[in-house]
Image (cartoon, rainbow over all chains, first blue to last red; front, top):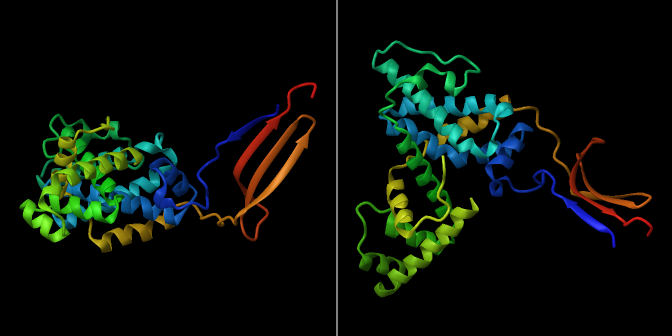
Length: 206
Length: 90
């Protein structure tokens, strides 16, 4: 009996970049794929922009950090060892540039980042106190961004339900949510459980 | 940096509520970065057309290759590759 050995190949070049994982997207970007680049930027724009904003930088400075971070990513693409960890790489780079701008604003001796310098060589990363952006906060930001991406993958009804239940500030009363969605107030509990199950599955698919 | 793959309902709810403070970058900024990227990326290769199936046989080995031709060129990407090797003596 002949043995058939299907061999997985690189991402289908005719596939949709929006459905691809980070490693496949990075591989396409390395080949100069513009659509993949756009997907990658849109996928992580919220996370990267939030890092400097969370540290208290202005809109203009946050925009500088944002642009710097993605520019560095383009330069770094050929050397990115673990493409699946591009999210962590982006956060680390945004944090480093944020701390550099903060140091300038606080009139601490500026420490320019040399081209090609890695994170562990960067003097800013050697600071004993990265107070504005501790590691735990960055980890938390990544989880929050990941769950929001998973939310965007849910069906329209589940997404609308989750947005009303979890994303409103101040939170809405169950009666208000039920009225807006045209469902019984008593069904919100079971719907919530089903919605969170869907969200958990969507997270696993990311 | 680990990512919990099976968070509890409470953890999911906590992340969702906390995510209200995430900020979208201004649309003009996102579009600018998207527009600037390709100028720094390697030259875009021609997009391939749908696959062309090719068979290659050599003694006990049969190879099926689905190639995608890049328009206007004689270069291809390999979309699928399958190899069949018959047992010895057959």
